[in-house]
Structure formats: structure tokens, C-alpha cells
Length: 497
Ligand code: AHR
Image (cartoon, rainbow, N blue to C red; front, side, top):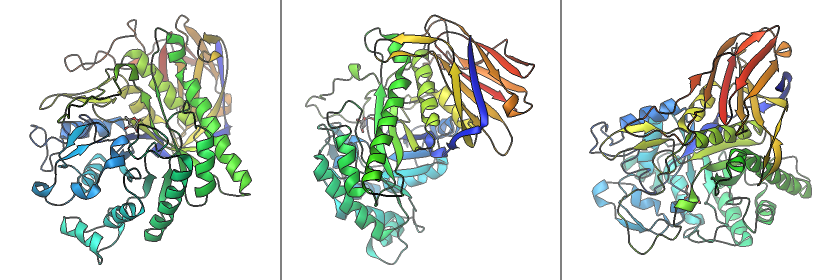
């Protein structure tokens, strides 16, 4: 038995809807035969796959980071604008692939409008620098009258693209990054790039690179060094994390949210340390701009010397357990809504993604699509604190952790409350009690759960709805207490209004 306490008097903070962001990189089949495939029967006049656009809208994604990822660190944005016949085919060094440049800046802005998402742009601080970042920003955001915005107008976009959020490079702490830098080198470049970009457009939100993951040898010191230089010039500090089942340690895998939680807490502490050093009133917020389950053990890392044309790369097929973990990672992001303002599920289509496609063929929802879509749709405007008293589970990686992991939201406009809960016990069904008195009179709207006797079950093109959320029976409210039974290894959304 477990008890979840929630009270509107104890709020984490307002929910920034950019927490439901995602990521499109020129990698594998994310762009080509993913979101863009002019020859596909469902393609529109721009070559965008409308079947994929529909799924993106259904997923509820609010913002999409582009064009990478590791790809951005040797990308020449100029190659991807202007008449398509004149665009060069180039070797992308990150993924050793031919980049045909048939999809670029103007196409992504047009696609974002169709998808109803805010584009988040990354600039190349690997092989390029201040000048190219400023030129790309000028191309995108300035009104006509000077060379670069005039080029945009000539390419068909009269109005400025007005991109508000810009990432200053990608994973610059990683030795795998083309143009990898030390913390000092990156801090100087980020400082000067931010300074110059703000002269073009002072109102931008800038994201400076933090660590590629919490296991980087430079983690902590990297953030301190970078923020000491850039604190007054940037708004958000980035962090990335991917999780996977290691060996057969399912208990730790189901507990992955614990690692994300500790990572966020450490980055917040480091940012606030610099705040103290600077005697600053300003608070740096976080952009968790890459997160997901990714089976990196299946990925060779070294890509070999063969240069690939557009071809599949890290197209992980997700299971029930993966969806439960993704649901729990979303809970973690919501629990930190006071400091995490942007988060991007990496990536959106085909490459470690909630949506998969066949070239020329079908598109379908992976298991992880479902907790994301439901959380994005029903999470309300304010995140509330939840306290759980109940059983623990033992995990080799994180020690004893609470079996239930939860958050709650309150929607100011409707008074609706949404509870999101994961049962991380592999063996035990847990009876949950939620006293509702502090929330006022509420009725149960629905209780959906995602779990299955076969935890390895997945969705495929032939069986796209093998794993879907289903109504959970037996849940009810009696005498001001909501009671539900949560099966082992399960994700839940309980809506009350
Ligand atoms: O999302 C795949 C890759 O993971 C990205 O290109 C990179 O930023 C990260 O290491």
C-alpha cells in the first residue's frame, strides 16, 4: 500500500510547455524518408510527409531542436538554402553520411509551421564560429534591407523566421564532437558568440552547452567554467542523458529516473554556485535538450570508413519497459519544472524516436509515443509537489529507491488535476491511495495505464497498436480518497475533475 499526498498549496511552479519538445537531426532517416520524402504518396507540395505531420501533432510536441546534434558541428548552413538544384552534396563527418542538402533552414521553418511547433536552432561552434552564427541569425531573424535577410526573401521567405531560442553548439565537451573543445576554449567562444548574437537580436534566449552526460570526466567543472564566463549572456544551460537496460539489470533500468533526477539536482547546484560567486540575482534555467532511452550497446560508435547514403541509423524498437521508463523520465522533468524550461525527446522520427516510418510506406507510433502524448496533452499549467509514502525497491545502480515515482499537475483554466505515477517494482502490484480533500470536490475522469504481461512487447508496422495505453479497472473515489491498483512495471495517468 502507498499513499500519495498532493496539495495545491505546494506547487513546484508553472509548467513551461517547451518541456514537451523533441529533436530533428540530419542523422540516419530522421529528415530524409522521415519528415521529408517528396516521392512519398502522402507528401505535400513541399515534400513533407503528411502522415508523419499528423503523428507529430498527435504526439503534442511543442518545440523542436534542429539541425543537430553532432551533425551541426560540421554543418555549413549556407549549403541548405536557395534553389535545390544548386545545393551541394557534402560529406557529413559526424555520421559519415552524404548530406544531399535538399532540406535546410527554410524547409525546417516551413515544416515547423505545419507541425505547430517552435523551432529551436543550434549553431555550429565546432568547425565554425562567431561570424557564421551571426550570419545564420541575420538570415533568419532580420527584416529585409541588408544582404543576408535579402537572401532569405529571395529564397521565398519575406517575413523573418523570428527564431527565439538558439543553442550555442552541441556537446562541445565530447571528444567525439567535430571541433571538440576544452571548457576554457568553449567558454570563450560561447561568450563571444552570445555577445555578437545579442547585437543582432537582443531578445533571444540562448542555451549554452553543459555536459553531454553526468559520466563525463569534466562534468561539474565544465559547467562552472562555462557559466563563469557566460552567466550574464545566456538563459539556459543544456544537459543530455540517454538510458538503457544494462545486462539484465531491469530494476536499475526501471529506476533510470533516479539518475536523471540526481543529474538535474547537480546541474542546478552548480549553476547556483556560480550565481553565488557572481553575487547575481539572475537564475540560470535548464534545457534538457536531448533525453531518451537509447540502446547504445547496439551502436558500434565507430562508423567505419564506408560513406553511407541516406540509410537507417540507431532505429531502436521500443518495448513496454522502455515506455514505462520514458514516462518516468517525463515525471522527473515535471518535478523540476521550476528549473527545467526546455526538454527535447531525442529524436522525433526513426532515429531513437517515438515515430517510425518505412521509406515510401507506413508510419507508426512506438510504445514511447504514448506516455509522451498523454502527458503533453493532459499536464496542466501548474506542477504540484507530490510526496509518496510506500514501499521501496532495491536497485544495483541507485540503491533503495521508492517503488512509486510521481508528479501531479493542476490546470488553472478548468480545475482539472492530473496524476502521473510509475510503479517501478518488477514484482509487486501496489495499492495506491490519494487523499483528495485539499484539492476540493473531484471526480474520476479516467485512469489509463501502460503495462503488459510481456514487458518486451513492441509496436511494429504490421502490428502498430500491439502496445497502447488502456483503461485501468477498479479505480474510484470513496469518501474523498482516490484508490487505484498499479500493476508491476507500469505507467499511469489518473485524471480528476
Ligand atoms: O541523438 C543522437 C546523438 O546523441 C546526437 O547527435 C548527439 O548530440 C548525442 O550524442
